[in-house]
Amino acid sequence: MAKASSKLSVGKILGRIGIVILTTLLLVVLALYLLMLVIAKGPSEYARKRFVCSVKETSAIGFLANWYYTDEEIKDYLGSFRDNTTDEVTNAELVQVKTAEEQAAEAGTEGAAQPTELVDVSGSTFHGKLLKVKDPSRVFVGISGQYGKEYAGKRVMDMVAEYGAMAAINAGGFEDLNGVGNGGTPLGMVVSQGELRWGAMDTSYDIIGFDNNNILHVGTMTGQQAMDLGIRDAVCFGPVLIVNGKPVNETEELGGGFNPRSAIGQTADGTVLLLVIDGRQANSLGATYDDVIDILMKHGAVNAANLDGGSSSHMIYNNEIITVCSSLYGPRKMPTCWLVAPES
Image (cartoon, rainbow, N blue to C red):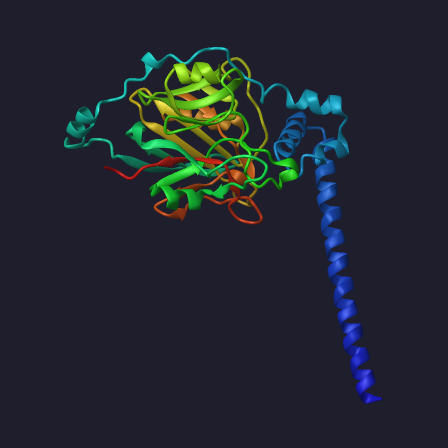
């Protein structure tokens, strides 16, 4: 009887523990739902818009907006921030990249800019890292391998090791249904080291890429136009943030939600700006597109574009992940990344 009573007591204890855990989880879910309800149906128009934009930019939880709003309301809150925001063509003459000889001579002078510089960036809702690469010829697109539904992408750290790079950030978008894509199928066009790896010559894409003169181009062009332009490395995503020295939000905010972000830009002297913003953290909710534009303009960007963000966003420097990846499962597999070759 004593043994049976002991077993019964253990069973009761485990059962009560299970009930407590289940009750706690239900209370947490209820609290989150009520919190979102307050934001979604509260008096603040700004909060409602940021809520819709934040969740709709996330593959896995985009459905949350549909709990509180109609399709028309969601469309109105989203606006056109993911549409192509400019028809302006990149003016390559606004960027004057120094020759290797000029850079070598400059490197020997006192106070010259370092080959790479890592900068902390922050705002009221975010923290992040900005990597400045003086020589744009060191920046190129790394690829995971063959593309298509039968293939999987690779983690950025694995591509860094494969190419022997000293730094990297995530790059273009990829098919990611419900946030569980394997990174094997890129969105749009991919050019790596002068070779077209994915895309069609007669299709228009939102291109983000460097030409053979190491100048960054951002905007819409066909695959054929990109090849004719001498694009050596490129991916697709968006929106364009800055073109020919002008931010696209000069007359109206670009918007977006508070989310992890990645972006690439270039200054007038050719320096490449690689930006990653942490998000979905207690101390860094994330940044809007306008926040990203402000950062890049502050650091002298002449042209810049938004890259894939969310759970894909992270930066690697000297074989370490130096930003916080918001994915619950760690860095994701993806088809492309922007790599920085070691100093020569």
